[in-house]
Length: 249
Ligand code: ADP
Ligand code: MG
Image (cartoon, rainbow, N blue to C red; front, side, top):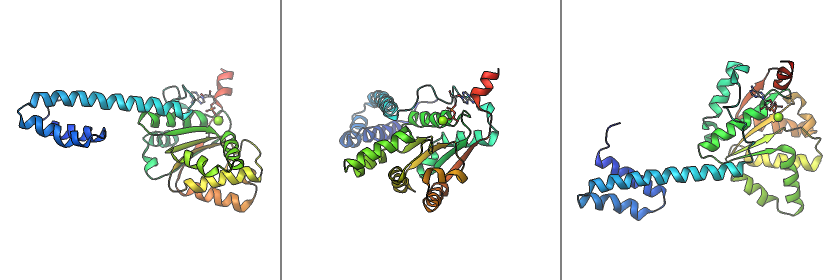
C-alpha cells in the first residue's frame, strides 16, 4: 500500500472527525495543518483518528453483543456447513452479509428439531453484530410473555419501541408453545409493526401448513404468513438431526 496523497489524508481526517461528531475539527484541522506546512503532523493525526475509530467500533460491538442475548459460541466458525445442501449454505452466507437488513427482508428457518436452525440464526446474528448491527435474540415464548406483561401495565407501545431499536429480531421457536388469543395478538402486532421496516429471523419446527397451530384463526394465519413471506428468504433445514447423528457415531 503506497502512502496516501496529502489531499486524501486531509479528506479522510475530515470524514473521521465528522463521524466523531466534531464538525469544527472536521472543517478546520486538516486545512490549518496543511496551510501551516505540517503535512507530517496531519498524517500523524490521521493515524490517531483511525485508531480512535477502531476503538469506537470495538466498544460498539462489545456493547451490541452484550445487549443481543445471542447464545455465545453459536457462530459460523463452530458450525459444520458441509452438512447442509449448497443452496442453503449460499442463502446463509448471503444473510450473514447483512444486506437483507437494508430491504427490511426476513429469514424463515424451517426444519425438524436438532437440524441446526437455532445455531445458524444465532451465527448470522453474531456476524451482523460484528459488523456493528444491533440484534436481539429471544425465544418467542419469552418475547410474548414480555409483551403481555407490558400490555397489562399499559406499556405496550414503549415495549414495542424498545424492540424497534434493534435492526434485527431473531425469534427462536415460533409456535413452540400453545398460544391463547392475547398471546397471538401481541405477536401479530409486533409483526405488523415491523413489516417492511425492520427485519426478523424466525425459526420454526412447523411448516407453513401447520402455522394455524400458532395463530389458530385461519384468517390471522394467512395474514401473518402473507406478511412474512412477502420479503423473505426461506431456509429449509432438510437434513438429519445433528444430535442423533452424533449419538449414532
Ligand atoms: P434446531 O434449532 O434446529 O432444533 P440447534 O441449532 O439447536 O437445532 O442444533 C442442535 C445442536 O446441534 C446445537 O448444540 C447445535 O450447536 C448443534 N448443531 C446442529 N447442527 C450443527 C452443525 N451442522 N455443525 C455443528 N453443530 C451443529
Ligand atoms: Mg432451535
